[in-house]
Image 1 (spheres, rainbow, N blue to C red):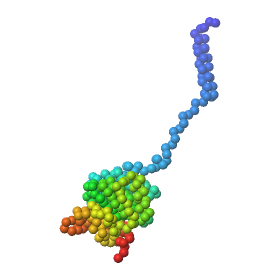
Image 2 (cartoon, helix red, strand yellow; image 1 turned 135 degrees about the vertical axis):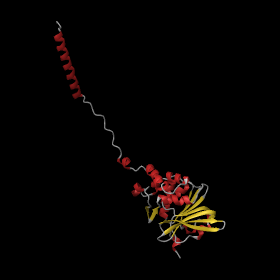
Image 3 (cartoon, rainbow, N blue to C red; image 1 turned 135 degrees about the horizontal axis):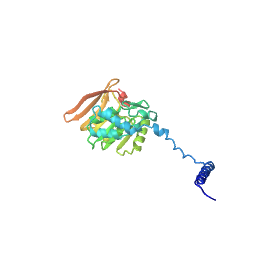
Image 4 (cartoon, rainbow, N blue to C red; image 1 turned 90 degrees about the horizontal axis):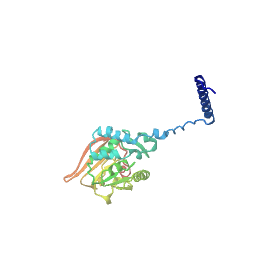
Length: 259
């Protein structure tokens, strides 16, 4: 067979046609499968609030943006997960600038009020603090981040159990719990360096003043309807009182309501 330049071109064309036919046939016999699509992101993960970001914004705008400057208070407010102390149905507003309902006619205080009441006690870190009105447990957690020991009393058994569960789940070991009427304080654990009351009587219970150490401070909302936050200090010359800011707390119940 004599191979000429024209016949070489013809053979090349036939060879190319044969290769293309084999490729098409192979594609039909063994089709290339698409790579599996990545699983869609979890809707729950996409929709879950970024609590760390919300907590940081709360501290920056609601606390530092006002008059909260105590570094230990700011550190505690940055650390304590407020959303762990509110009902599941209002998690998305846990860090809003307001008090929130927690059931049984009770509330978790506005973040600013929690920080303000903590700041006015001028805590240094070694104190033993009595809290009257555990409520959600959030204020007790903030105090426990700063001081050596917190003693907290709640009159509503269901709230007391819920708060204790939340605080235990977060690993707090320096909080002592009692269920009962806080009007009489905690005599066997007294005296206290500071006392905080988170429900409003129409007068300051004398047992709480009695259980305050010399030099100690008591912060308490006082009044029915219109209330003011009173700071009471036990000094060598007696007891001093001054009003700080207007507030609105749930009323103190139990003996505080009896004449």
